[in-house]
Amino acid sequence: MYNPNHFKITDTELIESFISQNPFATVISIKNESPIVSHIPINRFSNGRLYGHMANSNPHSQIEDNSTITAIFSGPHAYISPNYYKSEFNVPTWNYSSVHCCGKLKFVNDKDAVWELFNEMVSIYEGAEGWRLPNETKFKNLFNAIQFFYIESPEFEAKFKFNQNKSVEDIESVIDSLEANGENEVAKLMRECTNG
Amino acid sequence: MYNPNHFKITDTELIESFISQNPFATVISIKNESPIVSHIPINRFSNGRLYGHMANSNPHSQIEDNSTITAIFSGPHAYISPNYYKSEFNVPTWNYSSVHCCGKLKFVNDKDAVWELFNEMVSIYEGAEGWRLPNETKFKNLFNAIQFFYIESPEFEAKFKFNQNKSVEDIESVIDSLEANGENEVAKLMRECTNG
Image 1: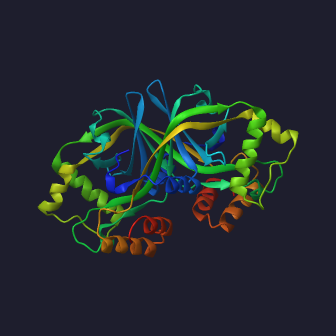
Image 2: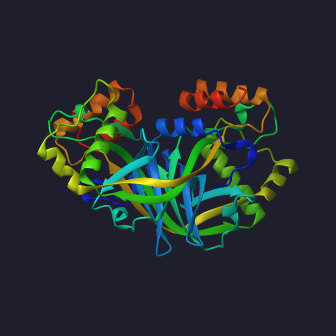
């Protein structure tokens, strides 16, 4: 990813928090010089690994174990009008946040491990009070139709493109304009990551 | 993309409208068996073509003219709890909408053409009353630092995964739950694309 220094994020905690808040990933692997692309939630589990799962009938389930994959986590983004800035000489741009994670896909084949992983995934989304996976055969049988995997040796590249190359006045003005347009998520993240 | 029939969208007008509403694309091409990925707005122009642009310093600008690229347009998406359904036997899933566009990248090298294209792009985002590109040398010089391109012979694959394999009662219940959680964009698109 084209990632000039003023947009580059290397803070591991910030990257992990971003993935937790934006787990719905675009997963890419290459086969015969073409991309295979799937849209899959990937979450960081308590052992520190990034896990996801997909249907057996997804062609992505047929790739070889240990294949290189790239998972792209996408955060809030918005069109930025030149009218948003205080200064005069600007052109339209797009502000956005993205984390690319490259690593090796490792399938989890042990059924008991998959059951445990699915339970942990449910807790991540449902919290303490939400839905729980019933300990019933008909639910356990569903897991015959999916492939759980994790990403081994993940390497991260993170870009938060939020006008960090502009003045504080411009950044504040862009945040105000975004909020005025109801683009609150991108405004909030932009405020957290800049001096605005 | 894994795309079972009940989620597949082939309506060209719906696909074009989706791209217009979700122009911020993830662009993938392959070099030396690795993906090059950029995040770029791509818009449908009045001549029917899909145009985008990127900085010269983006490695993606160095790929060969006529290279195969995939542009992924992503729409609203949300986690779906089993608690959202009326029926009993469900597991967590993710509802989402995605259009993949595969074609040949063609660079636009004519400077006058690029100026016209940039003006049209500004109109798309700014509407009739918004910012206009000043007809000044300092703005025209900026275009020396970017590469405009279009996607030739685009082929589209669209997936709107919105519980179409569930009962109308379940779909209505999911939409109500999403709205109750403030997930209004995904609820709205889900309502438009299902019987809910």
